[in-house]
Amino acid sequence: MISLTDLVDSLGPGLLRMVEHGNGSQVHDVVLAEPGEAAGQPGDIVLGVGVTGPADAVALLERAHAAGADGVVLKAPLADDPGVVAAARRLRPALVELQPDTSWTHVVWLVRGAIDRAYAPLPGPIGAQDVHNDLYALADAAAEIADAPVTVEDARSRVLAYSGRQDTTDPARVSTIVGRRVPPQVIAHLRASGVFRRLARSSDPVFVPESPDGMLPRLVVPVRAGGEWLGSIWVVARTPIPPGRVQRLTDLASVLALHLLRLRAEAGVARRVSADQLRAALRDGAPITAPAPPWRVVTLGTLDEAEDIRQRLDLWDAITYRFGWHRPLIGDLDGVLFAVLTDPPRPRTEADPGSLPWLRHVLDRVRSHDHALYAAAGGVAHSRTELPRSRAEAAELDALVASGHLPPGLILLEDAWDAVVVERARTATRVGAGLLGGPLPGLRAHDERHGTAFLPTLAAWLDHFGDPKGTAQELGVHPNTLRHRLRRMAEVSALDLASPRVRMALRLQLSALGHPTGRRNE
Image (cartoon, rainbow, N blue to C red; front, top):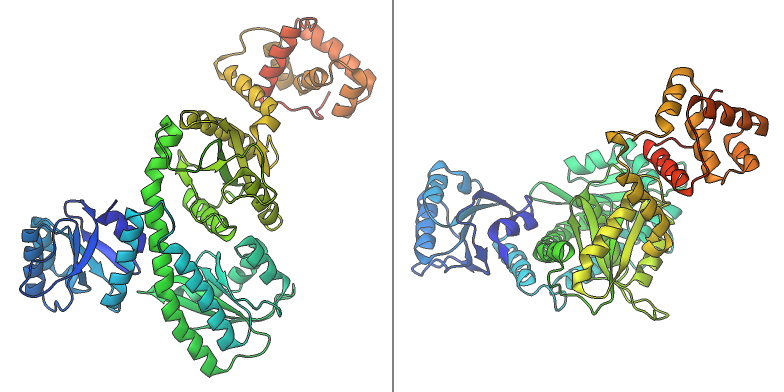
């Protein structure tokens, strides 16, 4: 099920805009306003085809209200007429504005496809796979027109489709296709050249000259709908493309725009429909529609701090689809992106999409082009009631990767359990509330007053089990210097290191204080 507000948000401002929200009910069909007949029924969106003036628009809103319909769609600028808006505010149906240059036939196609996706989201992809296949067919058509390799990319430089012929290309194109998005260094070059700025502001094709790093020239045709830049057709142009062919590519871009709108709408609807179910399962172990257990909850992250959660979700949606997981169980919770994967006890040679071996293969491929990507997997969940525990473990690992305590890649709980245990204990020491006595307060005060290195020295000594040679090498000092420091530390504060429990407590406190081993003044 889906509300009209979510449906409008999924289709995006390039097509629809909510003017008045109405009663916020769920919708399940789209109908045309027929003269002399009831304007829809509860759950319907009524399209104001043929409505030309404010009086007709108000009359349609009243008819839709009488029939119990949930929304009326009118083209701009009629939807913004003060009298029409005032009528919508006092009546039941929501008022939605449609961009004036959009075909009603296309609206029916896009809206009905999105509604179908919302009401049958789980058995299989109703429209998304067909849309992706259409995109690849359009990429092949563009390649035939240009007689050159082509990629279709969205406005965030993620690859949505590419032509079958990529024989005459360059390393940048290969990296783009394998990684499913344009490499950061190429994006930086294009941004510095003003390419993206021109694509965002104009419908005119852009020619990108050959770059010094070996990237071949590109002809870029922007894809727009309702003034919104949705994406681009990128052609490797070793030789100039004749004006007639450029015009044909521009015409093709208008067809491509509808497919991009539908893809975005259906992806957005599917995401919204499954997000609440997934969150409930991760929080409380609520029922979830997923392949048979055992499962693992995995965080999907990136060290690129410039990417927000929505960008991360879009990126991983593209990656999972590219590698065959067309119905991914992915969603955000508390600012972290999670996925539920199967963890077969006996993995097959060819990993199933959505399984842990599959994710390992995916990361091996995409990290060769984007080292910032990583995943952290909590422990095995044998039932849905264990999903919250696996999610909490994955979140702990994710925080350790993000803070630099674990290297990025695919991190499994059983491979990093010791780091999790230490982090839990370190957090529980609560040094912010005080050091509870012991030798550290005096040693820390001496370091702060005199610039000594007692705390990192003690940390290194504990890490090397009291071995003078290893500790001295860690600190980069002579063993005699180390012995002198230890004597001075014993003079400053009572330092009895004979007890294993004291040594463990000291090391946890030092870790919580964030004092690593290293060189400092004597």
